[in-house]
Length: 93
Image 1: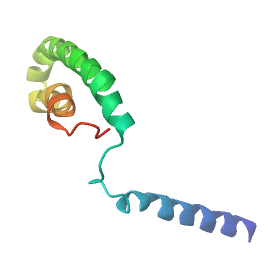
Image 2 (image 1 turned 180 degrees about the horizontal axis):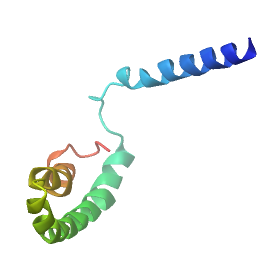
Image 3 (image 1 turned 30 degrees about the vertical axis):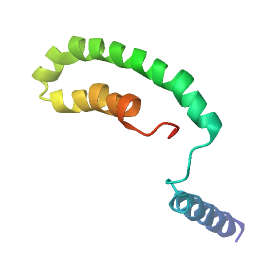
Image 4 (image 1 turned 135 degrees about the horizontal axis):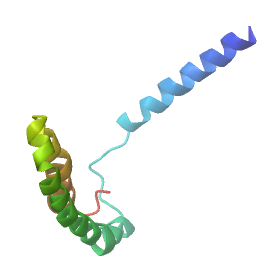
């Protein structure tokens, strides 16, 4: 009986935590601290890493061509970081 109760509590915990993100309003105004951290630290560091990822992409390109995964490699190393640094809203961390 104790094992069943532990299992039910575990399932209830998983169900309640997995739906918590659905309640959060992602259209809230970002806090001043998140805007400051984004502009002063995250974007410059992200831009530097983006330049490094371009080099990694060029180095990985021959292997990506051989395995027909150029699109996946470009998505991970170029598209997503580019969007994170240059497209997303300021303060949207």
